[in-house]
Length: 199
Length: 71
Picture 1 (cartoon, chains in turn green, yellow):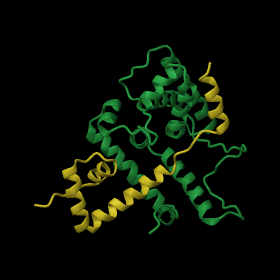
Picture 2 (picture 1 turned 45 degrees about the vertical axis):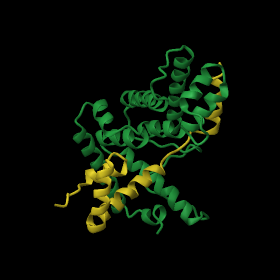
Picture 3 (picture 1 turned 135 degrees about the vertical axis):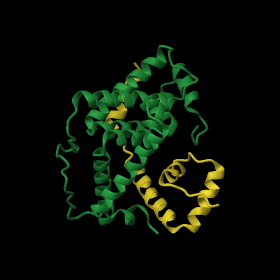
Picture 4 (picture 1 turned 30 degrees about the horizontal axis):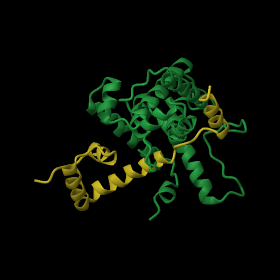
């Protein structure tokens, strides 16, 4: 349910009945979470968009063919499709991350401040880029749990079942992921606290 | 006897997977335990940072997707 009172389930029903705007609302509502889930796995924006398109092609085909199960929740279903496509791509391609900016330039390990930037905005932008890189550098098992819990909003129990481990193992991997991120951020002396946690 | 809370408990708390009773006990423990409070703050910092990593696809892509749905 959203702030406007129309549930995802209702929107899917409307879309099945021919209301194209209902599909647009579903995409607009969930595109960030779907895109981020894919992007953190494949590490390239253009690839992420391709896979997101593949995701919604499957979604549209399933809904229009009448095979969509109304009892399932829409977003978890879409995220499962997206996650599976991303993992399949990553395992097939398996390369070191190369993040390509929109102008074609690549983000390197060092971050450079633009001379005429607004300092706090630039700091936050660079901090985000660095944190994203740190997430992508996590051990696969930790990154998988982190993406599933934080972005796909799966419970630790569901994650444990999906990854075929105990819930304690899933929780342990999440704990290590968060500890690793925090330690690396502290080590790199990221101006994180001031940017994100203003007193 | 005061229950000892672990980092894992704090992670479950941050992600809303603790019971109401656990929440009450944990919030009381945080008041009394500065180390626990500090650990929670650090975990919350990372949590907020992860929230800030949410990104959108390009508008061009989103518009193309809308067009596809009409096929």
